[in-house]
Length: 276
Image 1 (cartoon, rainbow, N blue to C red):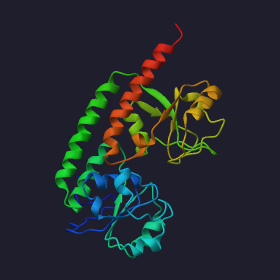
Image 2 (image 1 turned 120 degrees about the vertical axis):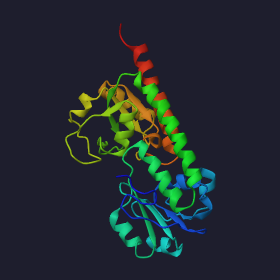
Image 3 (image 1 turned 135 degrees about the vertical axis):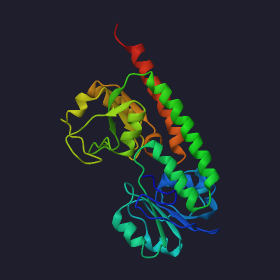
Image 4 (image 1 turned 60 degrees about the vertical axis):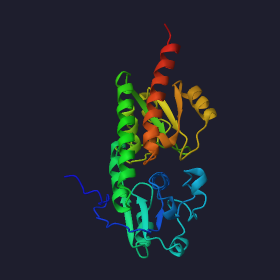
């Protein structure tokens, strides 16, 4: 059964916000979505990590991090709506915010195509149905083009690393895992059922992977890290912009295109360097 456009991932149906909503966002990618829907003038609070669109978002007051926002400061800013995400925000923080924010919109997309539901939800609540439809059209085109590119390429097993000290990866049932799968990269399993498991130094995942991917966030992996890990493991190691794999909203559109291009580049490079 398809949920109505105004129903969030917690099953709550949100009424139209009216002409002057005051929106707080604790999700960086969804802050970017609010601006993409021409709602920037109504955003009254964001996290320290809400950096896009870079020039326009600077005027919005910050309330701390995604996990530990300053609830007293958030209360002072008097939002009518709070945007949160199951993976990115702590339930106890969200429950505390419910005490003074009238409308808490819960999100939890599981794969790139679910961004269409995100667009429609925000469009329905904040009277941006037309803008939401344009984003949905652009996403469909980007995913279709990416799928056509990926279809011609061999799939790879990858170990996608998001953290160091300790090493951490993602499970297949996360948004990141689904995004990588759609790009032709199958995340290898590790010895844990966690959604974001620790990878032990002797875990079979290091051997099972055809390629290691290093995300630029939340740990800021750089080229030097990729070179060092390639020397250590003997595997090809590729740096990946974390916004391509983990950010919802408008970044999902650019991400689909960028990941398809990176997949093709990896295949071409591997073929060029293969031993005859």
